[in-house]
Amino acid sequence: MNEDALQRIAEALERVSPPPGTRPDFSEASAFLWHISPDRLQPVANVKRVALELLIGVDRARDTLLANTQQFAKGFAANNALLWGARGMGKSSLVKAVHGAVSAEYPLKLIELQREDLPSVGRLLGVLRDAPEERFVLFCDDLSFSHDDEHYKSLKAVLDGGIEGRPENVILYATSNRRHLMPRDMIENERGSAINPSEAVEEKVSLSDRFGLWLGFHPCDQDEFLQMIQGYCDAHGVTIDAETLRAEAVEWQQTRGSRSGRVAWQYFTDLAGRRGVAL
Image (cartoon, rainbow, N blue to C red):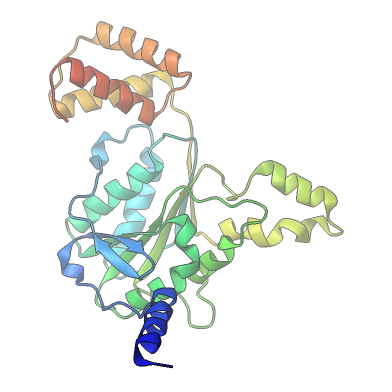
Protein backbone atom coordinates (compact mmCIF):
# COMPACT_ATOMS: atom_id res chain seq x y z
CA MET A 1 0.00 0.00 0.00
CA ASN A 2 1.52 3.32 -1.07
CA GLU A 3 1.99 6.38 1.08
CA ASP A 4 -0.92 8.32 -0.51
CA ALA A 5 -3.36 5.52 0.29
CA LEU A 6 -2.19 5.37 3.91
CA GLN A 7 -2.60 9.13 4.19
CA ARG A 8 -6.17 8.97 2.87
CA ILE A 9 -7.01 6.18 5.35
CA ALA A 10 -5.56 8.20 8.22
CA GLU A 11 -7.58 11.27 7.22
CA ALA A 12 -10.77 9.22 6.94
CA LEU A 13 -10.24 7.73 10.41
CA GLU A 14 -9.64 11.18 11.82
CA ARG A 15 -12.94 12.40 10.36
CA VAL A 16 -14.77 9.44 11.92
CA SER A 17 -13.10 9.86 15.30
CA PRO A 18 -11.52 13.32 15.51
CA PRO A 19 -8.85 13.98 18.13
CA PRO A 20 -9.93 15.78 21.31
CA GLY A 21 -9.84 19.53 21.02
CA THR A 22 -7.60 21.79 23.02
CA ARG A 23 -8.87 23.27 26.26
CA PRO A 24 -10.94 26.39 25.51
CA ASP A 25 -10.05 29.79 26.84
CA PHE A 26 -12.90 30.36 29.29
CA SER A 27 -11.92 33.99 29.69
CA GLU A 28 -13.26 34.68 26.17
CA ALA A 29 -16.92 34.75 27.24
CA SER A 30 -19.36 33.96 30.03
CA ALA A 31 -21.37 31.55 27.86
CA PHE A 32 -20.50 28.77 25.42
CA LEU A 33 -22.21 26.37 22.99
CA TRP A 34 -21.13 22.72 22.98
CA HIS A 35 -20.58 21.24 19.51
CA ILE A 36 -19.42 17.80 18.44
CA SER A 37 -17.56 16.41 15.36
CA PRO A 38 -15.15 17.75 16.42
CA ASP A 39 -15.78 18.43 20.10
CA ARG A 40 -15.48 22.12 20.86
CA LEU A 41 -16.90 24.90 23.02
CA GLN A 42 -17.91 27.94 20.98
CA PRO A 43 -17.88 31.23 22.92
CA VAL A 44 -21.05 33.34 22.78
CA ALA A 45 -20.16 37.01 22.88
CA ASN A 46 -23.69 38.30 23.51
CA VAL A 47 -26.28 36.08 25.19
CA LYS A 48 -29.85 36.84 24.14
CA ARG A 49 -31.54 37.40 27.49
CA VAL A 50 -34.02 39.62 29.29
CA ALA A 51 -33.39 41.36 32.58
CA LEU A 52 -34.38 39.37 35.65
CA GLU A 53 -36.77 42.06 36.86
CA LEU A 54 -38.80 41.86 33.63
CA LEU A 55 -39.87 38.27 34.31
CA ILE A 56 -43.35 38.71 35.80
CA GLY A 57 -45.46 36.03 37.48
CA VAL A 58 -42.63 33.62 38.26
CA ASP A 59 -41.49 35.14 41.56
CA ARG A 60 -41.11 31.90 43.52
CA ALA A 61 -39.20 30.11 40.75
CA ARG A 62 -37.05 33.22 40.19
CA ASP A 63 -36.08 33.58 43.85
CA THR A 64 -35.41 29.85 44.29
CA LEU A 65 -33.26 29.50 41.18
CA LEU A 66 -31.38 32.72 41.91
CA ALA A 67 -30.53 31.61 45.46
CA ASN A 68 -29.47 28.15 44.25
CA THR A 69 -27.24 29.65 41.54
CA GLN A 70 -25.64 32.12 43.92
CA GLN A 71 -24.83 29.28 46.33
CA PHE A 72 -23.20 27.33 43.53
CA ALA A 73 -21.25 30.34 42.23
CA LYS A 74 -19.85 30.90 45.72
CA GLY A 75 -18.62 27.31 45.86
CA PHE A 76 -21.32 26.02 48.21
CA ALA A 77 -23.68 23.06 47.84
CA ALA A 78 -26.48 23.47 45.26
CA ASN A 79 -29.01 21.33 43.41
CA ASN A 80 -29.59 20.45 39.77
CA ALA A 81 -32.86 22.08 38.68
CA LEU A 82 -35.70 21.06 36.37
CA LEU A 83 -37.90 23.93 35.18
CA TRP A 84 -41.11 22.42 33.83
CA GLY A 85 -44.57 23.54 32.84
CA ALA A 86 -46.53 25.76 30.46
CA ARG A 87 -44.85 26.75 27.23
CA GLY A 88 -43.85 30.36 26.75
CA MET A 89 -43.82 31.18 30.47
CA GLY A 90 -40.12 32.03 30.68
CA LYS A 91 -38.36 28.81 31.70
CA SER A 92 -35.32 29.22 29.46
CA SER A 93 -35.47 33.01 29.83
CA LEU A 94 -35.21 32.59 33.61
CA VAL A 95 -32.11 30.39 33.35
CA LYS A 96 -30.37 32.92 31.12
CA ALA A 97 -31.52 35.89 33.22
CA VAL A 98 -30.34 34.29 36.47
CA HIS A 99 -26.98 33.47 34.90
CA GLY A 100 -26.66 37.06 33.71
CA ALA A 101 -27.40 38.41 37.18
CA VAL A 102 -25.07 36.03 39.02
CA SER A 103 -22.21 36.16 36.50
CA ALA A 104 -22.10 39.94 36.96
CA GLU A 105 -20.82 39.25 40.50
CA TYR A 106 -19.14 35.84 40.23
CA PRO A 107 -17.10 34.06 37.52
CA LEU A 108 -19.88 31.69 36.42
CA LYS A 109 -20.04 30.14 32.93
CA LEU A 110 -23.16 28.96 31.07
CA ILE A 111 -22.72 25.96 28.74
CA GLU A 112 -25.64 25.11 26.43
CA LEU A 113 -25.96 21.46 25.43
CA GLN A 114 -28.45 20.35 22.77
CA ARG A 115 -30.65 17.34 23.59
CA GLU A 116 -29.42 15.43 20.54
CA ASP A 117 -25.83 15.82 21.77
CA LEU A 118 -26.50 14.19 25.17
CA PRO A 119 -24.50 11.05 24.26
CA SER A 120 -21.38 13.27 24.20
CA VAL A 121 -21.98 14.65 27.68
CA GLY A 122 -19.29 12.42 29.21
CA ARG A 123 -16.67 14.05 27.00
CA LEU A 124 -17.99 17.50 27.87
CA LEU A 125 -17.78 16.74 31.58
CA GLY A 126 -14.18 15.69 31.05
CA VAL A 127 -13.39 19.09 29.53
CA LEU A 128 -15.11 20.93 32.39
CA ARG A 129 -13.50 18.72 35.04
CA ASP A 130 -10.11 19.84 33.74
CA ALA A 131 -10.96 23.45 34.63
CA PRO A 132 -11.55 23.19 38.41
CA GLU A 133 -11.00 26.91 38.89
CA GLU A 134 -14.20 27.64 36.93
CA ARG A 135 -17.86 27.05 37.81
CA PHE A 136 -20.27 25.88 35.09
CA VAL A 137 -24.06 25.78 34.67
CA LEU A 138 -24.80 23.13 32.07
CA PHE A 139 -28.05 24.15 30.33
CA CYS A 140 -30.26 21.76 28.33
CA ASP A 141 -33.34 23.45 26.89
CA ASP A 142 -36.65 21.80 25.93
CA LEU A 143 -35.71 18.39 27.30
CA SER A 144 -38.04 15.42 26.71
CA PHE A 145 -37.82 11.78 25.68
CA SER A 146 -39.90 9.42 23.56
CA HIS A 147 -40.46 5.72 24.25
CA ASP A 148 -37.54 4.60 22.03
CA ASP A 149 -35.16 7.37 23.05
CA GLU A 150 -32.02 6.21 24.86
CA HIS A 151 -30.53 9.69 25.34
CA TYR A 152 -31.91 9.85 28.88
CA LYS A 153 -29.27 7.32 29.96
CA SER A 154 -26.55 9.80 29.03
CA LEU A 155 -28.21 12.43 31.20
CA LYS A 156 -27.66 10.26 34.27
CA ALA A 157 -23.93 10.93 33.89
CA VAL A 158 -24.64 14.56 34.77
CA LEU A 159 -27.17 13.89 37.50
CA ASP A 160 -25.51 10.95 39.24
CA GLY A 161 -22.05 10.85 37.73
CA GLY A 162 -21.50 7.09 38.10
CA ILE A 163 -18.34 5.93 39.84
CA GLU A 164 -16.35 9.02 38.99
CA GLY A 165 -19.11 11.36 40.12
CA ARG A 166 -20.28 14.60 38.59
CA PRO A 167 -17.59 17.28 38.67
CA GLU A 168 -18.15 19.48 41.70
CA ASN A 169 -17.77 22.56 39.49
CA VAL A 170 -20.73 21.58 37.25
CA ILE A 171 -24.48 21.88 37.84
CA LEU A 172 -27.33 21.08 35.44
CA TYR A 173 -30.38 23.22 34.67
CA ALA A 174 -32.93 21.75 32.24
CA THR A 175 -36.28 22.98 30.94
CA SER A 176 -39.18 20.83 29.79
CA ASN A 177 -42.91 21.03 29.16
CA ARG A 178 -43.21 17.69 30.99
CA ARG A 179 -42.57 17.17 34.68
CA HIS A 180 -41.46 13.55 34.14
CA LEU A 181 -39.70 14.29 30.82
CA MET A 182 -41.92 11.81 28.95
CA PRO A 183 -45.54 11.96 27.68
CA ARG A 184 -48.27 10.94 30.11
CA ASP A 185 -49.85 8.59 27.54
CA MET A 186 -46.53 6.75 27.22
CA ILE A 187 -46.43 6.25 30.99
CA GLU A 188 -49.96 4.85 31.01
CA ASN A 189 -49.32 2.61 27.99
CA GLU A 190 -46.19 1.09 29.51
CA ARG A 191 -47.93 0.57 32.85
CA GLY A 192 -50.87 -1.14 31.16
CA SER A 193 -48.80 -3.51 29.02
CA ALA A 194 -46.02 -4.41 31.46
CA ILE A 195 -45.81 -7.52 33.64
CA ASN A 196 -44.72 -5.30 36.51
CA PRO A 197 -46.29 -1.87 35.88
CA SER A 198 -44.24 -0.05 38.50
CA GLU A 199 -40.94 -1.25 37.02
CA ALA A 200 -41.97 -0.51 33.43
CA VAL A 201 -41.59 3.25 33.76
CA GLU A 202 -39.47 3.56 36.89
CA GLU A 203 -36.19 4.00 35.03
CA LYS A 204 -37.41 6.91 32.90
CA VAL A 205 -39.75 8.56 35.40
CA SER A 206 -37.12 8.40 38.14
CA LEU A 207 -34.86 10.53 35.96
CA SER A 208 -36.79 13.66 36.94
CA ASP A 209 -36.50 12.62 40.60
CA ARG A 210 -32.75 13.08 40.31
CA PHE A 211 -33.22 16.85 40.01
CA GLY A 212 -33.04 18.39 43.46
CA LEU A 213 -35.23 21.33 42.44
CA TRP A 214 -38.54 21.11 40.57
CA LEU A 215 -39.77 24.56 39.57
CA GLY A 216 -43.26 24.63 38.04
CA PHE A 217 -44.45 27.24 35.54
CA HIS A 218 -48.18 27.75 35.02
CA PRO A 219 -50.26 29.86 32.60
CA CYS A 220 -50.53 33.51 33.60
CA ASP A 221 -53.77 35.37 34.25
CA GLN A 222 -54.96 38.54 32.53
CA ASP A 223 -53.43 40.95 35.05
CA GLU A 224 -50.01 39.26 34.91
CA PHE A 225 -50.15 39.29 31.11
CA LEU A 226 -50.74 43.04 31.09
CA GLN A 227 -48.06 43.61 33.74
CA MET A 228 -45.53 41.81 31.53
CA ILE A 229 -46.30 44.10 28.60
CA GLN A 230 -46.23 47.22 30.77
CA GLY A 231 -42.84 46.15 32.13
CA TYR A 232 -41.47 45.85 28.59
CA CYS A 233 -42.92 49.27 27.72
CA ASP A 234 -41.27 50.89 30.74
CA ALA A 235 -37.92 49.21 30.08
CA HIS A 236 -37.80 50.24 26.41
CA GLY A 237 -39.40 53.66 26.65
CA VAL A 238 -42.60 52.83 24.74
CA THR A 239 -45.51 55.02 25.83
CA ILE A 240 -49.14 53.96 25.48
CA ASP A 241 -52.21 54.77 27.55
CA ALA A 242 -53.53 52.00 29.79
CA GLU A 243 -56.91 51.69 28.06
CA THR A 244 -55.41 51.26 24.60
CA LEU A 245 -52.82 48.83 25.91
CA ARG A 246 -55.48 46.65 27.53
CA ALA A 247 -57.73 46.65 24.45
CA GLU A 248 -54.91 45.81 22.03
CA ALA A 249 -53.27 43.23 24.29
CA VAL A 250 -56.53 41.39 24.98
CA GLU A 251 -57.33 41.28 21.27
CA TRP A 252 -53.80 40.04 20.52
CA GLN A 253 -53.95 37.19 23.03
CA GLN A 254 -57.43 36.20 21.83
CA THR A 255 -56.17 35.81 18.26
CA ARG A 256 -53.33 33.62 19.58
CA GLY A 257 -55.65 31.59 21.80
CA SER A 258 -53.34 31.78 24.82
CA ARG A 259 -51.66 34.07 27.33
CA SER A 260 -47.99 33.68 28.18
CA GLY A 261 -44.78 35.61 28.53
CA ARG A 262 -43.91 34.73 24.95
CA VAL A 263 -47.23 36.08 23.63
CA ALA A 264 -46.75 39.23 25.72
CA TRP A 265 -43.33 39.80 24.14
CA GLN A 266 -44.71 39.18 20.64
CA TYR A 267 -47.41 41.81 21.17
CA PHE A 268 -44.84 44.24 22.60
CA THR A 269 -42.55 43.66 19.59
CA ASP A 270 -45.44 44.59 17.30
CA LEU A 271 -46.25 47.64 19.42
CA ALA A 272 -42.65 48.82 19.51
CA GLY A 273 -42.37 48.45 15.75
CA ARG A 274 -45.51 50.53 15.20
CA ARG A 275 -44.14 53.20 17.54
CA GLY A 276 -40.80 53.28 15.70
CA VAL A 277 -38.77 51.82 18.58
CA ALA A 278 -35.84 49.49 17.83
CA LEU A 279 -35.33 46.64 20.29
